[in-house]
Image 1 (cartoon, rainbow, N blue to C red):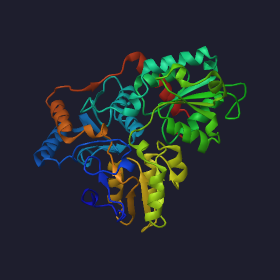
Image 2 (image 1 turned 90 degrees about the vertical axis):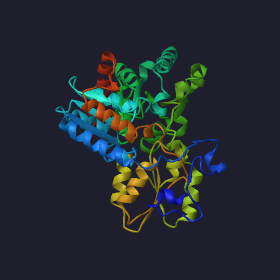
Image 3 (image 1 turned 120 degrees about the vertical axis):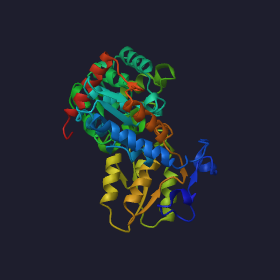
Image 4 (image 1 turned 90 degrees about the horizontal axis):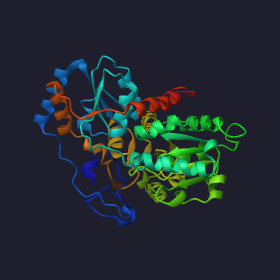
Length: 401
């Protein structure tokens, strides 16, 4: 499928396969995402978007996540990761409308951090996040009850990834925890360990309940904090007591929620071995939401912003294999034509929920707002918003934020 990714220099023996348009059973591992790549935008829609955006002027502020389609990013006033965008929205009090081109939990965070006078709009309400949806508030509350029954809740601090619902952020705030991003997860976990146990820090006996991405939690605990894989256990909400014994919970330092990113979870250690065999001196750069075996096999690991900065500073002519969402990889590859940029997995799957925000939905939202009609407003429950803000404020108080 080289015509789909003309800005990449793909290994000749490893053509990219868009899921549903070719098959590699070893790579797909039983996952299918049938369908065609969306056609280029209708020029009429592009013009309608420009007209509606101009009509709204400074009364609207459009945010675009890095994983969005290019046709949507074209109309974003600012591009970034989820937390950066939420903070950018809060820094624009003059904008009555915050149009968030991302997914639901991101729009919730923007609503929490902006003023009551501002209204947050999500162009497609079906743009959710499979990872965030893996931690439902009722399940998390039941898990906490299990920890209470086992007598360890008092020595446990919850830390939730930014990629979680407002209800989970609120749960974290109510129980004295904090939110983290992929950039500051190490700082957040060190802070959490300092809050609990008979002695402070990682060497104490306190615990962290990390939600909802097990891979970010595990990679941070092991690679950044020096804990072992045996110090980490996975709580499965679908099993009695999370599928854990009393002794496993007692011995654990990090209790990981059984959640993951459907895009980053696709990358494998075999992908890394294959690209190294095909591309001499390749630098493997992956996101910490990838599996532990992928992270340990990579050369560099970091957040979306880290990945962008690494490629911007890369030596001209160097080769890179990047393990993160394809829209971002393609965009960075185009920005740096002097680099050889490869997608780590030859079987390609976009973030399907992020891609629900397309130009037709954006045009509909902008035109509706320009006509005085509020659509798809995201409003977080007041109590949840309060406690989620407590957790977010705690993150903002961490060193280096």
